[in-house]
Length: 91
Image (cartoon, rainbow, N blue to C red; front, side, top):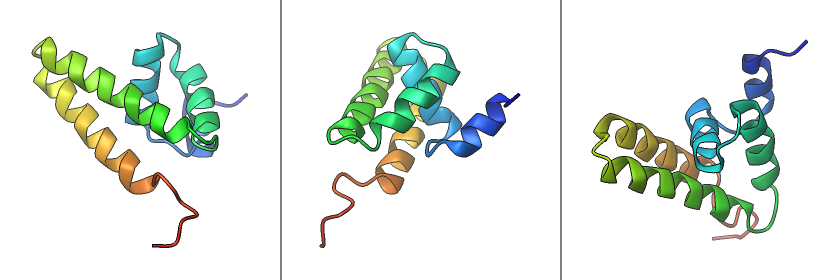
């Protein structure tokens, strides 16, 4: 049986990125791993994941949950660094 950590190691997302997807979609983290891993290889999926993280960040900020907002901001920065918008485009 695969554990949560095993599944995360097979996924191209961090734990915080997975948690942001789960929070946004109101689904278990294991389902968010699968959804996120699928989205990052679809044409518009990377933008969708960014939007999910940004929505969560805006909600955390609006609620005054600054610690959670800071984690989400770091998750967004990491996601943008590791999953560029157009990975096949030559600069």
